[in-house]
Image 1 (cartoon, rainbow, N blue to C red):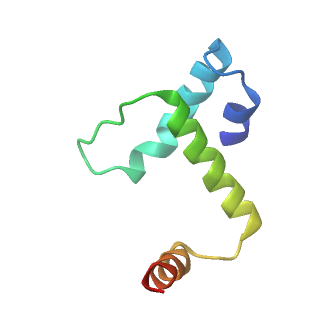
Image 2: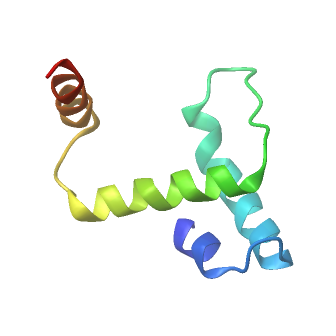
Length: 75
């Protein structure tokens, strides 16, 4: 679904459709009652970055990533 978004042109019908298809996947990641609002560009960029990181480090778990990030900040 993220690839479909990234393959669409920004501000196009294809982008709107791709975002609509992603909503079902994003909902469980949000707290109950939370609304996701804002411009599509930052969300598109965040999803692209997340996909890149997942492809670069497929075996790394979220917990490992958080630990690495915390260690890097403490240095």
